[in-house]
Amino acid sequence: MTASLGTDINHAAQLLRAGSLVAFATETVYGLGADATNVDAVAKVFAAKGRPTFDPLIVHLAGVDQLASVVATIPDAAQKLMDFFWPGPMTLLFPKKSLIPDLVTAGLETVAVRIPSHPLALELLKAADVPVAAPSANKFGSISPTTAQHVADQLGDEVDYILDGGSCSVGLESTIVSCLSDNIEVLRLGGLSVEQIEAVIGPVTLKQASSDPGKQAEESSAQLAPGMLKRHYAPNKLLVVVDSLSDIELQPADVLLLPWELVNVPKDLHQEILSERQDLTECAAHFFSALRRLDASDADRIVAVRFPEEGLGRALNDRLERASAR
Ligand code: AMP
Ligand code: MG
Image 1 (cartoon, helix red, strand yellow):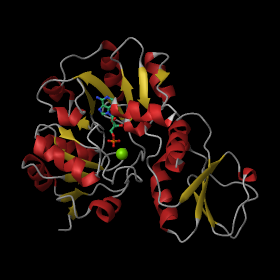
Image 2 (cartoon, rainbow, N blue to C red):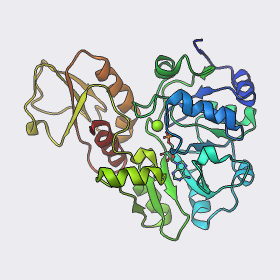
Image 3 (cartoon, protein in one colour):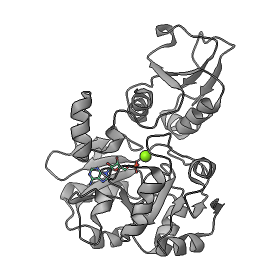
Image 4 (cartoon, rainbow, N blue to C red):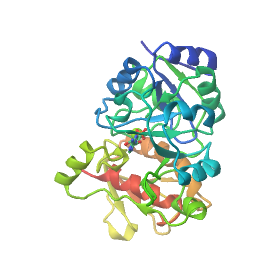
């Protein structure tokens, strides 16, 4: 079976309601969706991705009116963030209700929820009228998909339909925030910057993944955000990350991933420039596509230059670190 690709929302919604898998565009990356209340459908998501079941899924809703069916309480700080940033690239944690099976949350008592802003995603969620569990529509650990074709290339045989909403405008996964204690924590950097969140809610802390592999194994089974796994978002080729091209001896078979045009780049090396106008938002929107193109080239090695550590640059650097980890 090869999934058909199109814009038929009602067909996609019917498939979801029938327990099938539908990949769909969101503003962050393409999601691999299943009815979050149907444990058999959710099991297919883990199987299709090759995703370990200790890694919980984000539940997508069409609107806040659906929230009461899936969450037990709404912390005040979460309410404030929802009012500001939903629909949009921010996921919040809540104590869960029993409608959401344990498989979705990897046995946790909390559920991660988001309302996406992509119009097609919202229409699909509305038409399906069920909460939809959806991780990124790629094989576990590999580069996230930002076009329908990326999904077709990797999961075309596993999904029943791909709802094509064009290129993702944000291009990075959602920022995951926990307001479950008084200490507001960013569990995963993503498409909404820490600065934007702090402007609304005041200082937040960033959860750091342990660099100790033993500890990481413990943490991953304790269900830290897998966006926190050391190796993730990874190309097949060797990826080396540098602060500046002067830090590395470039080879003829290298290709370059650059935030913007840099001086003294050897002319004969292929380069992907993410934003001519030096805009980190534009860098994010082009990041995964560019990484895929470089991975598909016949180069031996991808050399990426780090982004400024501000705004979406932090999330981009986080993706580079994990994509380059061995
Ligand atoms: P993905 O959709 O593949 O980007 O992954 C979803 C992310 O949400 C993962 O990093 C999960 O760990 C995170 N997540 C989902 N549910 C929870 C939860 N209850 N607590 C902490 N993180 C969660
Ligand atoms: Mg993912």
